[in-house]
Image (cartoon, rainbow, N blue to C red):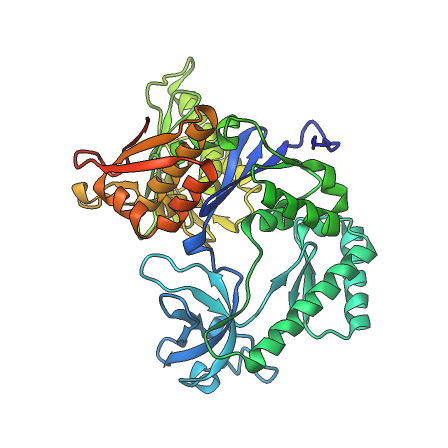
Length: 498
């Protein structure tokens, strides 16, 4: 199906969403004017738990920390702080709640994952549940009605608040709603349909909670391709392209039901060149795993991620400019500011981020650089705060982190260098190998293939990822032989056509 191009101002970026589905892994990319801005990766063995609602069981209450560990059925117990619990009517700022008065060991509690488990830390929980739909987010325990800050037209904001309030009262629903950014201009009937859908979901959760045993998943978020449609499909999106026929049919059904105006903007990709190769996404992902980021001016960034923080160092490199040194530094820093904003989003870097700009003496230059950074960060959907430039040229940013960074998801510490660097995980290498198998099968159509790889990779193919590997072999029609090569690096593999 061809993509029906929306009417977009020449000043607006052209946004495209690409979805690559392969055995065991789904990847979704968001491009603006052909440049990769975000990459989302979901693997079947380790899907994201953010947004999931569980019937948890209190494992331990920590009065000193005003927190509790809650078992929800994941690998590690999750963490709930008193500040993430819905306040009762009698509880005020002056009458602050104490977690030991709210929870006891063995209690059951409805919780939602607000932050993914990272490293040795368990998932972060909240009892302030939020259930999203296309236009609305339903909060059954919070009575307020709100509108996304990105909807700036005051008349539209008032219309949405009045409409949602009226619909809530008609349905007799407790709690509150937030109108999402994509709700801008949504008609009454669409908001009503969304609200009825959310009412059904909430009632189902309540019914399950009354009968299910503890540590049960009561509500899970949508699969990645459909979630990308729900969260990112706005009038500015020129098209959504997916390379899997079954997922495309699901996406088409979703748009017909919830966003019929976008039906003509979804297309099934069937060309022989892999989708992410066609758009340069595969190469962009590889670059996003490297510490060094070149700047067009000739300078470069060094981005390093540690347990405590992310550091970004700006360098002029070989660029000396054609004017004064001050102008060279200003130009490099301004270019770096916009590049840093994109890299934070692309690499999904969060927490504390410290940027070391090249030293500037002129105060007006500092203001220009800071303004460029703040302007570039406005497009970032993650909440960010930016500090002032220090006398040493340092800027501290905090960026909300809800899921693993791209590096942590795809890579692991390098044992050969005592953790000073990183290499791709065995799982990441295997999924790259699967994509290469599909590419070879499509372009060369061999009957038999010999795969040479490091022993650990061969071990994964025969054990943890055996089911996925067999699916790839079946889908491609390939007869495959495996051969372990002890001299291969963990990231190295070869496919030999027999």
